[in-house]
Length: 208
Image (cartoon, rainbow, N blue to C red):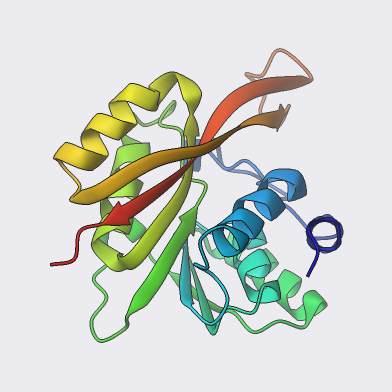
């Protein structure tokens, strides 16, 4: 599937109807989602025929992208039941098969289920300090092959240091820098839209 085709399909998905600020729910736009998953597959072979988990899947955009790129199995995890309802509708609309599980990914214990690749757009940690690192720590325990994650560019050194020192990463690499268009979703947002620089990371876990 070509990148433009993937972006076009993701652009039709429903997003949060009533986003929850405490969960830092922001939609992962089709531009970023398509490039994230397309790069994971075309540069590293981490999606097609792999078991892919989407942590904090929200409305299922990254899950859908993985499925459209022929992952063998896709599992979306989120703590919010309303988001998972929307994600299920999106999967039905695209006619793709995705398993959605309601749970707190930071407390996730997977037994017997081998996950190759974790993809995620975690909370940036602006409402709950350290939320981004909790997600990264959990993902590194689950993925056997790679973790793809978006983090604010301003946290780059901190992310790299923590991944290599604390989260058992063999490598931590910024694949590209992207612009995240943050729409005005909450009352405390002063501007109509904010443009945030984010890094797309690829982390490779050490084989135990």
